[in-house]
Length: 128
Length: 161
Image 1 (cartoon, helix red, strand yellow):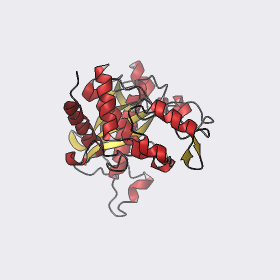
Image 2 (cartoon, rainbow over the protein chains, first blue to last red; image 1 turned 90 degrees about the horizontal axis):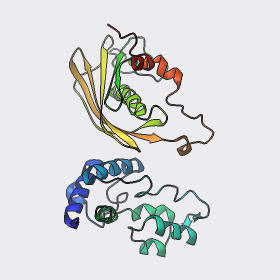
Image 3 (tube, helix red, strand yellow; image 1 turned 90 degrees about the vertical axis):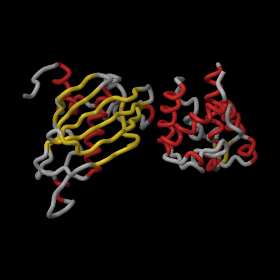
Image 4 (cartoon, rainbow over the protein chains, first blue to last red; image 1 turned 30 degrees about the vertical axis):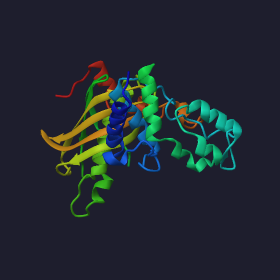
């Protein structure tokens, strides 16, 4: 069984290498984009490193779902529709959506991708 | 000018390594931009040469079916300058090869002296990722691959010296 502390340590290492941040900046609540300065291309790097560190396969679109914002059914006037939120819940089961659901401003969707989300995803993969 | 910073491919082994040559020449336009009285190849273009070499290695892993783009330069160090008359040996080695892309280590040397080193991340793209109107694979066209001698290397034909 995967130990949460161990998973968090390895995830931290991956993020330090991929994003060039200091170890103490990587907290569970830290958002990849907002707090750690990740850009879209960093996501590929992060997926690579996680796959290698944990010897798991992360299918494309599993961790950072694509096309979330491209459909007009999901996004209207810069805000996510109910249908969009439903889709989001399906695709990001590891994310904490409570704050976003209260104010589904699409510009802030990056805040959903947190370190905790990564740790939960990896734990789930390792334990399945 | 053409955005091709590789003159000839020497070796190419699927999923493992690629070696190519680039001659730095006074005849290149950009070489005189920096510095007007002291032409040299900018470090960014040295990286581009490595990326083009590594990009072919990356593309070959999927038999050139996908487009490959330069995604991230993770580490790059430069030990000396590349000046006209230098023949750069571009050596790239596959570190990690996955469905979504790959990571490659590159080294540039002149007469055995290391000039630069870099670690480069490439992403694989399907044409559906980009413009549906764009031609299927505009990165690895047959013309491009044949011009660089990639097809000759793969056929084991006409090895230089």
